[in-house]
Each structure stands twice: as C-alpha cells, then as structure tokens.
Length: 97
Image (tube, rainbow, N blue to C red; front, top):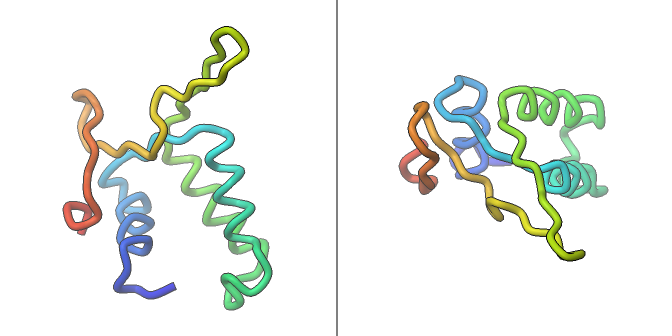
C-alpha cells in the first residue's frame, strides 16, 4: 500500500481520530476478506491485518442493517465519514488529507 494513496490517508485519519467511519458488519467482513486475499498485502501478516481492522472497528460507528419485507436495506450504503456531532456528511479523499 502506498503512503501517497487515499486508503493510507483514510487509515491515518481514523488512527488520529479526525473522523469516524460508519460501517456495517457485512462491510467489515468484506474488508477482512479482501485484505486477507493471498498476495494482496504480502508485507503484512494475518495478525497485523487483524490488528488494523480491530483498530478501525474500535473507532467506527456501527450502522445496523434493517430488513423490510424480506429485503435488506442498509441505511448508508457506503462508508460515511464525519468529524463532528452534527449530522454525517460525505467527505472526498482530498478533504481527508
């Protein structure tokens, strides 16, 4: 992972508590599955990936998924980020840096 990319900027902003990611359990499970794909992050051990995901989750807000009539609806379909108690607003990666 490059230290110049948007992913790095987002992870560093979460680490420094500049915003709170809003995530669902299925989204975190997908993050975990993708991060642990063979060869994707060869410089990280599984335990290191787990530690990063644990920190990310510990600083995230869980958005529960509701089911209506057998259909699942996620209140927020993408990670929504905010840095104040006011209503969430979406930030672009250029605003995170």
